[in-house]
Image 1 (cartoon, rainbow, N blue to C red):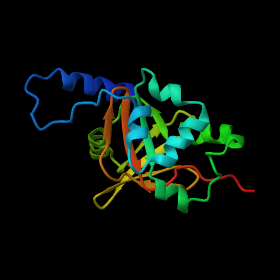
Image 2: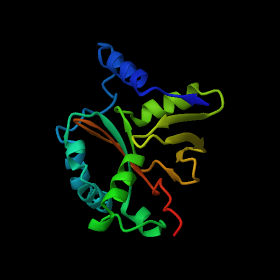
Image 3: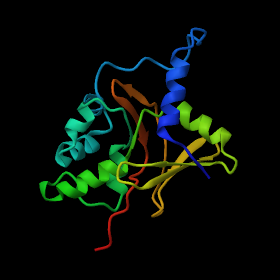
Length: 180
């Protein structure tokens, strides 16, 4: 299993950005808006935006970063067995959910694809802000992200490049609710 250092990914991104021969059809330019602003503007990430507001971590997503957020779409929360992370009484759990869906650094889908191509066993691990691991693999054309507790989701839709990171929509919550 390949463990990708976010610092190595960022260094590669920095070097590729300095390449004057880069193709015009390369990665899109980042938005001038922050991760927090991009979450608010996204049409299908309202539940996660409410989780961010309740978590007390909105300033982190408005800060310098960079961070990569694996953002469950609204539908993922409806089908997931999770607490109501928007409830003020669940502030600590909301913060834990958000940290479990973030990694340090700006990692694009192209970065994940490249790492998977280089991986001998077809899987790549990255450490989240809560200290957990997410493992990326391919299932056909889809990129799947999984956690050690068995939560799994697919990267869906288009990534959003913000001024301080990247948002990847996912079709599942990547944190299982603790047993009652």
